[in-house]
Image 1 (cartoon, one colour):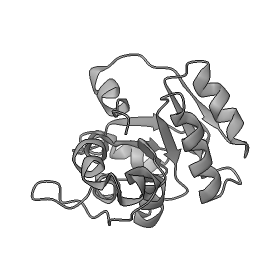
Image 2 (tube, rainbow, N blue to C red):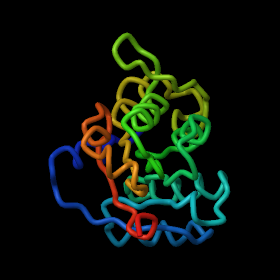
Image 3 (tube, rainbow, N blue to C red):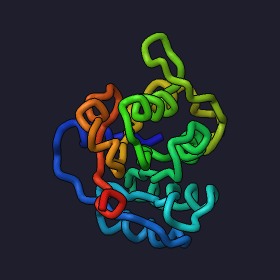
Length: 180
């Protein structure tokens, strides 16, 4: 299991360069990872990508150690769980309008523990080596999953300070077309 890096790089303020993937063929992600992008977003909101497609893209990126972020269709714990089980190192949650919604996304990305308050269920899938690497994944990788919120609604703009101050939110992105 590779060492997670995305969340730490975001926290350090280091400049990183990434891109968006919307095409179905995982060779696109493999090529982009190979040429040196720091991260790639697999768009599962505004594309025709299936859960299988997303997993194939994440697998292709992993060959070159490129962190994969999955842009979800909604702030839904089931979609979050599926993206993380497929091996995403981060999730991008659309249309987060309040700190309450941001907190729900963070909790859905975290396993329950004495300190996390997480609600993520356990599925023995690709991310955990289909169960063979679960303890290492749970202890070392899962706590480093990045949660990125999308500010795309006037309500989010009104509550942006509280959204960004939500413990566990690692980054945000503005959705200019949605806001316009």
